[in-house]
Length: 514
Image (cartoon, rainbow, N blue to C red; front, side, top):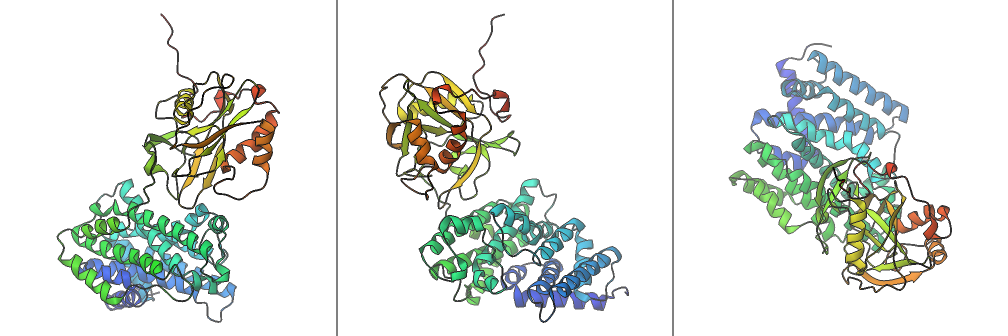
């Protein structure tokens, strides 16, 4: 390997620019608004990524082993160029020079190449989390690389998260646009859990109602990622904001084109016309604040805003059950709801019957499902017992007596078409008097009836679908565990409060005299 000359380096940047204009037209339109010194670095990152991607996606007549060898050789050559500042490959020389001059961490490139290798062995993903694991290296990391390239000064963790979100948003748009093309390569980049939930099958290449429901869900998820990314725009210099705003607005318009095609991504590629790309770039070039165009796009496609009867703060949790923050309920629940604290209550009368409710048919989440007596979210600092009494009072107009913990560490994930639940959800039994007066809140409860435990158990454990009239997914999972506690809810053993998530305290502390 010989040290790269200035001529070699200039050639490398020209080749990267050509790759960007040919294959990444939306990025190219955004990059036009940068100063030439910054523009070439955007092209270099794209050129490296595109070349590696083409090794995997366009193998030609090479065998799988030969493709893997070629990708490894390309990765090795890049890291050699990064270490030495020299390469016989002009594109690698340009990419390595950009990384060195702009201070892009080597780990970013290692994660990127790991994702490219995954494409050689993995053709589908079971869950959204699994897909995100792949997209960390194939997309989110590109957002991280762009921060030093675009001269973001001392980016905070929030700015880094926003940059990652934009990388994810761009790639998810690609995945949705290119479902048909990816099928031709034997790959599916839509989580299998989503396909199963909606009953959609991309291999049929048919735009039926299950497919439309799936696409509406994925597009809503995609737009949420764009909104998360928008929070980082202010950290960029003006010209960089123009660049990113153009790419963000134009890429999001691909989703509009998909919608205009009745969510058909099989018969052709959804494209934003070149004239519109040029007009958007020209408008943002003249705009004193380019992010205004982004906020205008947000008003055209606002997030789903279901009508929550209340908007109490919800306690956000880490995987170990520690509180990591709080957020209004309406901002917590969406297509990719974060882990948070909830509870489920089973109200039991003196005869051992369980109060079974049907959720109101206009509830924002899981409308019309048959479920346990009451559910809710403890407010920050509120004890579990106090939260249970508050929600039972609100939902059913009922005052309960003893509240007993029966499942301390229950957790679940469940989804409707556009909303998901993801809770650590302790389960309690609350006793009440015989034949209590019930005044269900119409915004919460459609019906409330007393069932024997055996009737609820049998109904919940019977295989069924989802939607109004079925037993809620969390109730089904809870009953599957509760049945092992015995046939009479009045005698179920009390769970150990020490097994509760750390963020939960069971009861209000009673002050002692001194």
